[in-house]
Image (cartoon, rainbow, N blue to C red; front, side):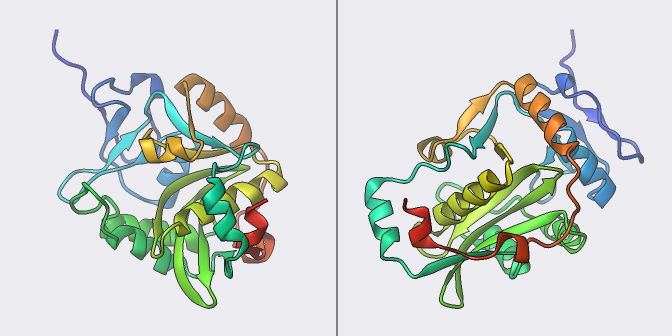
Length: 244
């Protein structure tokens, strides 16, 4: 029997059932298509995300299990880190420096990683999503200097995190903790963190079976939430407020 291959996408923004995703590599579902807004939104609504490197076709993934943060439990911060936050002057805002956040996520050096999957086509595509109110950045500031952040996509009452970075030690943790704090206040239960890794596990992420993740996503994206910038809605959070 020949090995099963990922589905080749056609011109319409339609995806195959996630149950057809490969086991090896874990979650590879489809190849091709484009990064248009309708296709990206259709993907996220179905628990699918694009992830590919320069020189590759567009690859679409739905891994099993799925890594998530539960906003009710928040992000796990060590006692030492929390003590530092109580004395910190950092503040967290949303959607004031999206381009800078995604550029930093694309260019920052990461241990063991050569190059980036946030290729120029991805940066342009998520820039358009941001302009249309579907993609958001969470930004950590030291006074007015951007020191870290993350970005992702929101549909309904579900947030799909894409990437984060620290320009100063711990800034990405603060961005993630602030996001969880606000989403908990809004009644959003999960942050999608895509693929399991040790760093996320140490911060309190957990693995969900794909079928359980898909059920939650289907319910959350069906909640009516108007797309748009989060700057006013998110407001400003101080680092000490996250240390409680």
